[in-house]
Picture 1: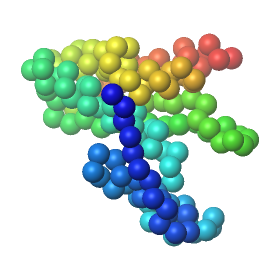
Picture 2: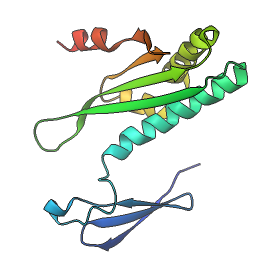
Picture 3: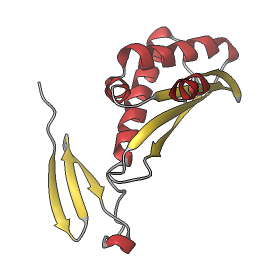
Picture 4: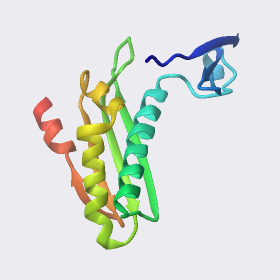
Amino acid sequence: MTHEIETQWMGKMQFNALVNGHTIVMDAPERVGGEDQGPIPKPFVLTALSGCTGMDVAAILRKSGKEVTDFDIKVSGEISKQAPIVYVAIHVIYDFKGPEENRDAALQAVMDSQLKFCGVSHMLKQIMPVTWEVNYNGVSVFSNKKETVAELN
């Protein structure tokens, strides 16, 4: 099985990608010749990671019957200082709100996604550090960012 997308140049700096029947618009800011009709391409790597791990976590929690009331993911990619501009490290923040008795299930769902299931995370970990932290009802319950940063130094 393969995944395949098609991308069409729409003029200037805009490209439209057809992904499973959905159109994704990519463009550049006006300052570099685009019309800012969509995001630049690189952050889609971060988007793919957030969607992959998010869907894992939602499915795991649903199957366990330990659902939460709110769940947000923020992904930041640290970029290199010189060309080619690439991500050199990625950090994911999971923010949950829900019944206190489901806190451990939410943490376990994140760990299962990051360590067993999320293919995007596994691909990215081949080329750079991917760290994560989990907050539940505003309280930090896990972070591995410091230990990975220490390994790099």
